[in-house]
Image (cartoon, rainbow, N blue to C red):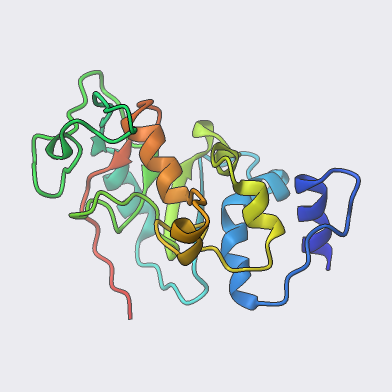
Length: 198
């Protein structure tokens, strides 16, 4: 109830009962809002991340340092519909020369699923963000309030989901893609990290 009250206050200030959840998977939709709900937890930290409860981490500091040093600067010319004019310009999985950086940039988002053939940039089991990139990236999705108000599990922390297609809800994968490819604000790590999902 406490979490739902905090979310209600964030979504509709003054209405502490606008959010009601009954499905435990809905907790995944809340992951991107964690820094806004608990800002005191970020004080003094360079990164924040979400992860699934069943994740087992190895030497995470070693892999984060390695990932940070391999940025993908993917801002490219876009078509009117918001898609890249050239998919090969943003697909570092298939094209090693894609997304070059020129000014000593470092990665500010790390996702073990990326790079991948589909250029998807968020993954529910683990995605990490530089704190100076922002702690309210969820608000870049025009539908974030609808996602949080709805009792339906929307896969908001992912790049897919039924409501992504049925309701046109932008997930964090869509947000990161837009911030990387259209605005050049997000620099994904193109370091292929070892991971497994059962």
